[in-house]
Image (cartoon, rainbow, N blue to C red):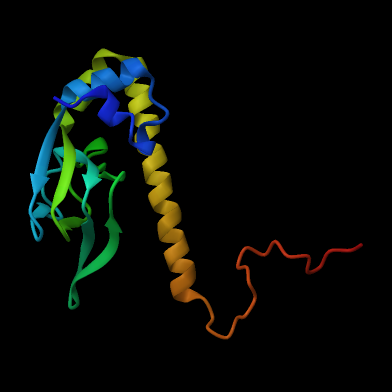
Length: 168
């Protein structure tokens, strides 16, 4: 079992109350994996998720004709695995440890059961997971903007918030 004070160290869980953290702590267990360990296989059943305490995990996607390509690397304080939330409950990416990893692992069936038993906890859990998804989406957006930016563009901002076109 994981302690509440351990969970309170994760920024991802800041929106959860002490009671909600206690419920989550009861569902977690400490795990460790060596470097090079395959945590997730793309397309397989999604049945758990992790809060990474220490170490790094590489997310990858299989691209026909190109093999596995790295999508993102996650580290301390980040959440891994939310494919268990929506049907068909299959992993959308693969995941391998880059270095030894210490994490808190949660069984998705147990989390779903707890959410069904306590709708307030379920709402808080879903809100926290959605925040993690949005954070990951923004990180992906930033990488795509960098990848597809025009190398000749010397403007300091891609946001378009400069004062071009404004009248004074």
